[in-house]
Length: 385
Image (tube, rainbow, N blue to C red; front, side, top):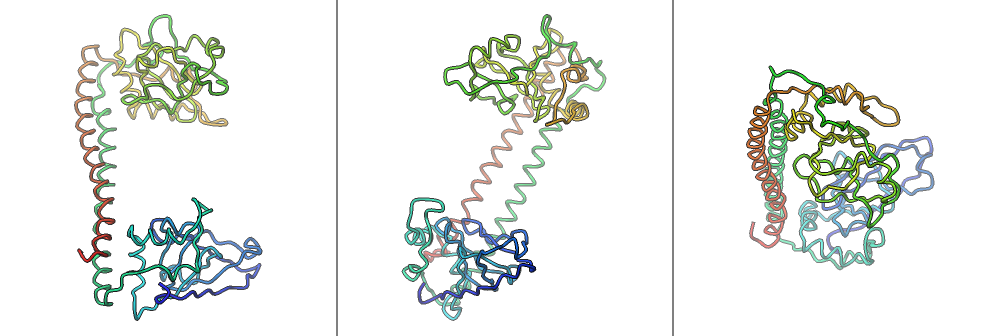
C-alpha cells in the first residue's frame, strides 16, 4: 500500500458565515453518506478537510469494520474531519475500485484490523502510519478492470434480486392482511365487542404503575409481548406480588384476547396457557370471550383492517395515543354462527400456513443473496472469478 497510495489532505479555513456539508462512511464497504449542512459557526474549532473525486478515504475509528470508500463525483467538494484521512491512488498501478473491493474481502479486512490496535469501537483506531505495511494483490490493470467490471455487474444483479424480494415480501404482507378481510362475513349481524365478553367479566386494562423488575415476581405482559400466533413462553418483565394483588381483576388464566390500547394501538394477542397467573400493563386490555364468540375468530376480527380502522378513528392523542375502554367496548364485530366462526378460523389458518411457507422461502432467498457478494469477492481475489 505504501507504493500505491499517498496521503493528501486539504485543510480549509472555516468561515463562520459559510455552509459546510460533511460526509460519513458506512461500515462494511457500503459507501459514503452526506450529513446535513452546517454553518462555520456551528462547526466551530473543528478541523475540516476538502474531498476530491477519486480520493481513497477511511474512517479511522471504524476502518476495522470496513468503513472506507472512494469519493465519487456526488461527494466532490464536501468535507471530512480529522477522522477521515484522504489518499490519492497511483492509477498507473492500481484502480481505486479494485483496491476498495480488496478491502471488502475478509483477507483484506483482516489486514486492516491488524493495523487498528485497541479492543473495540472508538478505542480501536487505525494507525495511519502503518498503512504501508498492508499487502495488496496486484494483477495487470486489464485484469483489475475485468474484475471490477464483473463485480459491478454482480452487485447490480444482486440489487435487482433484492428489490424483487422486497416487493415480494410487501405483496406477501398485503396477502396476509387481505386474507382476514376476505373471510370476514359481510351478511352476519353486527354486535358490539362489549356484549360478547364472558359473564361476570368486563374489558379491563391492567397495572398503572408496575414498579421495578422483580426477578422472582409475577410475569407481566406488555404490548411488545402480544402476538396471536407466536407469543413468548413467558413475558420478560416481572412485578412484585404486592402490586399484582392490587389488580386481581386482570390476572390471566390463558386463552384471553389482549389488545394494545396505549401507544401501539390495536396490537392483538392471545394469552397462551403458559401466561396463567400473569398480569397485564395499563397499555393492554384483557377480553374474556363469551359463549357466543370463538376466541380465535375474535382475535382475527380484531386484527383485520375494519376493526383496526375503527381503533384508529376512536383513538385520542394526549401524551400518547390512547384507546378508551368505552370505545373498545363499542367495536363492531360481525357475528355469524359458532359453526361458521370455526370454519372461518380453519380456512384462514390453512391459508396463513401457505403464507408462512412463502415467507420462509423469501427469508432463505434473502440469506442466499446476502452471501453472494462475499463469495464473488473471495473468488475475484483468488483468481476463480
